[in-house]
Amino acid sequence: MFLEELKAKKDSNSLALFYFLRGLKRRWNLERKKAMADFERSIDLAKSKTIKYIAMAELMNIHRAMKHYQRAKKIYDFLRKNYENVPEKARKLVFSFLINFCLRTESAENCFGKFRSSLYLTDPLSIYYHTALGRQLISRGDTRDGLKHILMACKIARREKRIHSIIFSYNLLAWYLKNYHPLISLRLVREALYTVGQCYENLERFYYVFDTMFNVQKITKDREALLTAMNILDTTKNSRLVEEAKVFIPSEKEYRVDRKTRRFIEKNFRPFYKTSKMYGVSRTELYLVTKGNRKRIKGETIGKLLRGLEWSPDLPEPFLKEFSRKMLEEASKSAEVTKEKFFVVYSSMLKRYRIKGAWATKLFNLNPEELKRRLSKFPEGLRFLSRISNFESSVEKARKELVEKFLRMMRKDERERFMERYFQVDERIRSLMDVYIRNRIRYRSHRTAIYCFERAKERELVRQFLYESIMREV
Image (cartoon, rainbow, N blue to C red; front, side, top):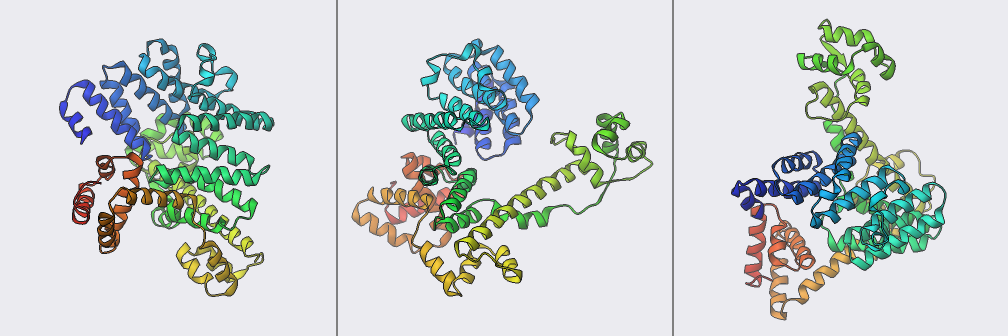
């Protein structure tokens, strides 16, 4: 609603703010290319220096995340050179992006210059400094001092109540401690997952925390390891990647060459003798393609040429298809690795180290629900399932507490009507109400919880449920 009002105003600053906020929303949804386009439009339209410089910092961060290092470095150099022109209220935020970028691309000693001060080292933004310096020291072999810096980041994040920083720093400390103090590591990563469940609805963004939990549980032989593996397969996009990849990976071994493709190869890969040496492709094939004597080009050749290119929507169709194929293959491989870990943990937890043949193949290809059904058919598997069924994950525990807080907000008669109505409606409305309840407690606002739903129909269903059950906004 607010974004629509901004867009309707039509003046430059309102439109700049509209594109900036929409870019933030898209970045949080991991729609990086769309977010990048929005931030660029915001920079072009902004008359306010505050919006302009913050949008530039966000754009730099996206370029770094997409590994467009030259573009990101260009924006970084501009912002650092013009830092004194950044408005005071935007300076702290822009600085956090600058220091984060520098610490990820250079050594910590080179990152401060005129920025460094004793005041900064006590500032909440020093979380970036301590985590990056800690990782750098550990990579050099100085584990003791590196862990001290990461622990300092955890303390600052907890003191300042910065949710994302708590998750990130606790997860990082758990990862590096797992081989030295696995039980402490397990407590830390459980706390990180509890915070994820309490504060966020979209678990796919926090796959890395589930992965840390999984690896720590393997070391500690924790009985919840299989449950975590099932959560990984259930709650992240990795559960769908293998099947989706099989459907969408193009199978073409050769691509038809059009005029755009010929011009693109001519422009980007001349001289061909250098390209041939650098990428291991046939110079003759490139020459014949650009002259129009060859109407098709091998997918293998395009795959080799792609190593020297960044993704762009302006790529010719054969290059886009081959690029998509490679990305999907990598995603498929990642999902297969996850399923393989799942299989290894299952077999080790049951002490069935020598599962072979058809049984192993069946197990590896099962989904979590089917696996539970198969396990229940033999005594050892049944005992294992009964053990893990008594546990609830840190995420589930956090979400359960949110529901309990919501129910305590209502009078006894309202609570009874609410629960009666809840079990009468279908599964779809129940799932919408689950999300609403959690967001209502997270944001302490009925209005905000309603507008967390992007579709108007979903918002209307939730409002209707509340009216029919307790006849008021909670």
